[in-house]
Length: 311
Image 1 (cartoon, helix red, strand yellow):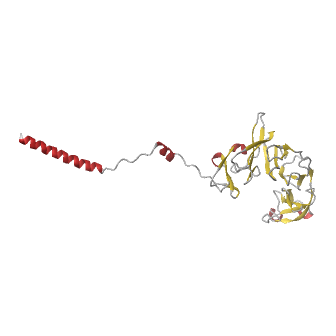
Image 2 (cartoon, rainbow, N blue to C red):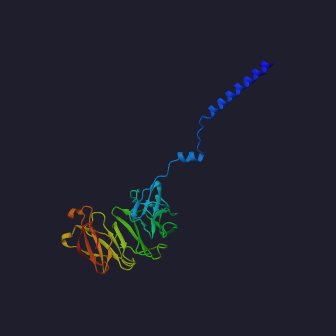
Image 3 (tube, helix red, strand yellow):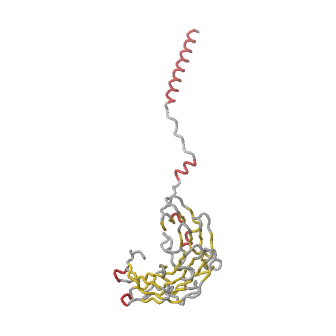
């Protein structure tokens, strides 16, 4: 009996010793790695947002069309605001641009006003021309209808001369080298628009704009121009007449396309560029002309290098 008791005690001691050794060894086994949560796994596996690269209008204001979304920034890309407008509506029409950048002159983007001219389908199988704009850097947006129905756009331009007066110039329904050009003006900051009279021409428009609420210009001739074809209104668009541009013989056939005139002290100035095939002085030199009768007649002032600032 004594031997049995002693044997049992020995077996118990050996068991305790083995258990202790096993416990010490198992405590040194590294614990299983903590598995990330489902949310963390989703964040790791989903693609990270693409960094937006600003297209600068003027420092620090810029825009982006990345990810098929128009966004704007007023702080060099530190923060962005989405514009509530589908990208495709900005490029509808006969002319669509590259669609990698906004069509020049179809928008305004500065500290005081943000505006985008666009078209969308209406209920009459046509295109409605509209303006989306903000006066508080995109915090709130307003929409206005410029024209309820219009042909697919080729030329488009929007601008304001002050807080209340602005204009829209559009063209469409082109056939060969002819098209309709229409001018609209607003006197309430863009809330409502009125169509002006049309000049007596159907040539393709090159450019246009207003100096103030009364004086505006439309410049025509984009295909093989031979001389400036500039029209002026001095009554806010109620009537238009052709300007008389007096070009010295030396510059005939060279200066043929008028840009938008601008105010200079007590007179108006305009730059007239060479045509697509211009070769005078390398084809880049422009002629500066001035007017003392609100754009009715223009006289030559000087040659202007493209890098020379306008005085």
